[in-house]
Every structure is written in C-alpha cells, then in structure tokens.
Amino acid sequence: MKPFLNVPFLPEERYIDFLGSCAKDLDSVHFSLVHGRALDSRIRIEPLSAQEDTLSGLARLRGPKKYALLNSRFYTPELLTDHTTIQPVLRVLEHCLQRGVIDGIVYCDHYLLQVLADEGPDIAAQLEAVPSANTMLDSCHKIEAQLSYISETGFKLPGKIILDRSLNRNLDQLAAIALKIHHQFPTINIEVLANEGCLPYCPFKLSHDSYIALANIDGRNQTHVINCDIGCIRLLDEQPHRLLQSPFIRPEDLDLYLFHVDTIKLCGRTLGADFLINAISAYRARRYEGNLLDLMDALSWLANRLYVDNRMLSFDFANMLSQCDNRCDHCGFCKELFDSISRPLPLVIRDQRATAD
Image (cartoon, rainbow, N blue to C red; front, side, top):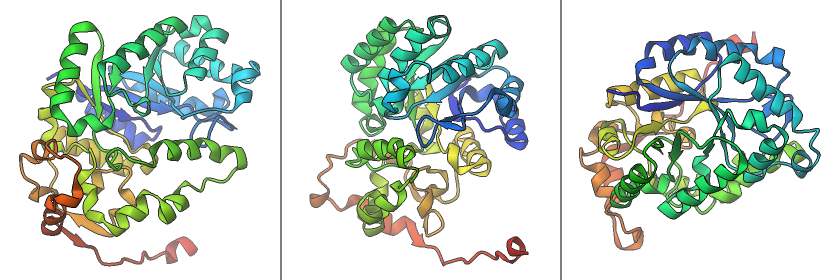
C-alpha cells in the first residue's frame, strides 16, 4: 500500500524514532517554524541555531514530504507592509531548502503568501503552497480558484489539497469532488483531516482562529476561557452527545475514505508525542479499542472526564452519519447512541508531590 498519512513532526528523539519505524505509511509530515519573534500566538521564528534540533530531526526522516506551517488566519499588518520584518521568515525557509528538509508551506493568509513571493521569488519558486484546512475548500469551484491564485504568486502548485472537514460527513459530495479534481488535476493528491473533533459547521471556527491570531498582539491567549464560557466547550459540556456529530474519521473507517482520497491528515501537534504515537498507531492499525476521545485533538479536554467506547460504534457509523440532515430537534439518534456507548470517568487527582519536591 502506498503512504497515506500526513502527521505532525516534533523534534523529540523518541518520536522521531517512532516516525522512522512507520515511514512506509507516511506520505508527509508538517512542522512548526518556531520563533522568538511572534508572527501569531502559534508561529514564532527562532534563530537558525535554535532550530537545529528540528532540522536535524527532519533530515533523519527519509521519504515523507515535509511542510512548514505558516497557517495562521492572519498576521500583523507590520509583517505584510514593512518588508524588513518578513526577512527572518525567508531566511529560515531558505535555510530549510539548503538543508533539504522542506517541500512546501501550509498557509491560510493569502496576503502572507503574496509578500513571501514578492520578497523571495527564488525561494517561492522552490516551494509548494498548500492551502490549509482552514481555507475550507468544499467545492470544485473553490479549489480551482485557489489553485489559480497560487499559480499567480510564483509559488509551486501544491502536491496536495486538504478538503474542508465538513465533507467527511457528506460522502456523496466528497466522492464527486474527488473524482472531478483527480481528473482535472491528476498530479495533485486529495487529503482529508481525520481527528480534529471540532463541531460540525462550527459557528465559532472563524472567530476562534482570529482570536488565536490576535492573542499575540496583547500577549494574552484567552481562547480557552472564551470557549469554556460562551463557546464550543460550553456547548459540548451541556450536550456531550453532540460530539458524535463532529466530522471525525475513525481508524476503522479509513478505507472508506481512502477509496476516494489519497491521504489522511492527523492533527494534535500541541498535545505531545504520547498523544501522537497513540493516534498514529491506531490509524495505521485501522482499529482502536479504547476511548475514542483519546484520538481527538479538539476534544482532548474531555478525554479524562468521559469514556466513549470506540468498539461499540457500528461498522457503518460513517455511512449512517453521512445521511444526517442536521435537524437535531427532530432526531434523537446521536443522543441514544451516545448514552449507550459512553460513561463518565471518575475524577482523578494527580499526585504532584514528586514535582513539588
């Protein structure tokens, strides 16, 4: 079988060894351009010397393509208008090219893509520009337009596109889009995101991404507090059965999607190596016998409070949910299913005495 996974890269020895052991299944990895100068609250650029662990680790990983994340919703106007401020980013990208550890960037802000191309045309010409999942490509017209805009910048066309997460719950539309794009752009792979665990058609998504980007301006990241008080965490805390509506893909359903698409993206970079090793192992095995929430990125906050028995979900779970008409007020399916496969977990107070000592 050809490689089918796109997974996060972390510069940790144990994790790099693990990725090496499953390299035959890895189509690509994505990594952070970490930095002391903030571009947004997730992306910071370090001096080149401080990136040696990341670059050396990437060099050890032979085979998978490597994509740097520059996928914030937006950046400060200073970065886009004062062109001296973009130079550190270009220097890092150039150094990655010289080391042979980068194939492209994942972006969301087209302004950033354009300024990178204008200020570093030779660098841009060597890199694929891959639209982030947060560009929400959910139709052929959107995909065609995005590819056209990329071609006008001077960046290479992407080797893959990541479809919007909503298509995971609309298999007919997913199949139709995949068929047309494969025919129209035969060199471009199609990818879907499996384990984010966000709400379907999340009403908070655009604002949430914007607040993440804004957090660096005043130095305070309050997105978790906001979501607890008035956002998705509050909603799921009150109606936990709605997590089953999330457009995730279970390990057991992988081949249903790989019949139409080429690769599967796994996320959870900020949750650490243990989470990623567990998730990657489950999706490689196409089976998981534990708590479904242990595999989900955005639902990780709930995993130590609630056990959702993945084994008890039916083999046709994905097909059933793809028939959902989102009229939850007239349907009790998710609530009934949730009640039958989940149970609350006891409160565990961790022993912190060793840490205190």
